[in-house]
Amino acid sequence: MTPLWRYGRPALVLLLAGLAVGVPLWLVAVTSAKPQAEAIEPNLDLPRHWQPAANYADAIAEGEMLRGFLNSLLVVVPSVILVLVLGAGAAWVFARRKSKLVSAAYALCISGLLLPPAVITIVMELRQLGLAGSRPGMIAVYTGMYLSTSIFFMTGFIRAIPTELEEAARVDGATPSRIFWRIVLPLLRPVIATATIMVMLYAWSDVFYAFFVLGGGDRATLPLNLYQVASAQLYLNNWHLVFAYVVVMSLPMVAVFLVGQRKIVSGITSGAVK
Amino acid sequence: MTDTVVQTRKQPSAAGTPKSVGRLPRAAVHHPWWFALPAIAVFAGFFLVPNLLNFYYPFTNWSSYHADIAFTGLDNFRTIADDGSLLRAVRTTLLYALLAAVFQNGFGLVLALLLEDDSRFNRFFRAVFFLPVLISALATGYVFQALLDQDGAVNSLLGTDIPWLGSPTWTLVIVTLIHGWKWMGLAMLIYLAGLKGIPGDMLEAARIDGAGPWRTFWSVRWPMLAPAVTFNVTTALIGSMNTFDIVQATTGGGPAASTEVFNIYMFRIFGQGLYAQASAMSLVLFLVVVAVAIPLVVGLRRREQML
Image: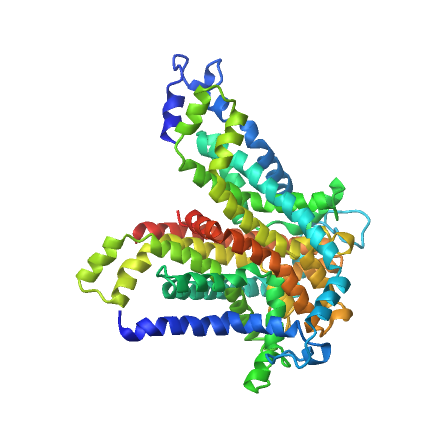
């Protein structure tokens, strides 16, 4: 390695990080602390007048943020749990059994990795089922959309686990459900961590499907709220409030990532390249 | 895995195939179907059925203006073909997907190569470059709108007055750059894993044979990265055909509909109450994705085997 590259590489990394990630984040941070008059033409200057507390309080109150937060939790958490538990059950069968029917069912179930969800007819179907605009409807749609991903990753993972553990438990007289809950699920922990973060990431920031299924109103999730307030007159050019909202909305994801960083990184990478 | 195969073959085979024996095959006892049924039911009910319905409703007059839904044949397709939106959406979406995939993979690969060694410095900056993945696409869009607006931060920084998001030709490129920016952290992680998977003695051998860094990259590392490339390119292309948030938050499909991808069109037309027409566009998106995905997956898999 040449000496130039030895010092050049970290310098280049710093430069890239500063320009590509630092500048946008800095813009968000400073703008969210400015009064409206300064924020109307966004720039990278420090606020002349600091008022982060007032902005965040405004964003939380006017943007109905607490309600949005609760709404987001109420659809994202059940979706993630369903995707993981249902996905693990299916993956177990798909990984361990061998027949044409199983392969066909597996192929069908992972087709969602590539195919786009038919969002317009989803609305139609949910209306007929009486689930339009409801949380169960939204949960069902998210679960259907992300099951393919979890089944794909988990089936690959289970295939790599030797069957001896299951067999030993079976010899001891354990039923299939007992084996599933006590042996298979705990072994799946690394892939569960990855699937959790991926599904959370997509569902937490989704605005497209939430718009079609939930619409606006009482059940709007955080991003949907942000979209509505940012497009409404109230927030037009109110960058200070939009960015205060962005910060609060992004914090949970950043926190989840920081807590599970190592597992997430190793999970994403091991699952993908197989 | 081989175990189960052996076991099922050990079933009493006197009556021919194991399945035809009165007793349930062992696989069915040990891994019963009902574990898979809930997942299959939800997936079929809320993913496959809507996609099947999507082959019917585009041929009706379903909208907020009719009380009933009647079959109207190809009317909706004729409408979107005649007003030019069909061709425009196909072209814009394919171009978007292509550019977004190029940028996302290019950025990701460069970052992976820069941050390859496992030092503390590099681990920290990997997390930094992963941050955009964690920020919602909608928020990303707003951030870049504030940066690139004509009254925005970039122009005030450079002292220029360029309408970054106002050019019917170049705005699509800028929006796809933003898309690439948002997802480059994920591509980076996957390339890092691919790089880590290359056996050390292979690189050692290349070094002993006198290969420089460039030669090593093109002759050893790039071919060995094939599975990571397959995964990244496929997910980037397919994922970006489903894009919505970034485009909506930066341009809303404009200027002059030059960034109106499928989902933006559906969103707009659905908002006007023309449900069947939106559904027709959704069916076209489905067909385009299938038409791109199948040759892509087959082709990249073949490339993996050849390299």
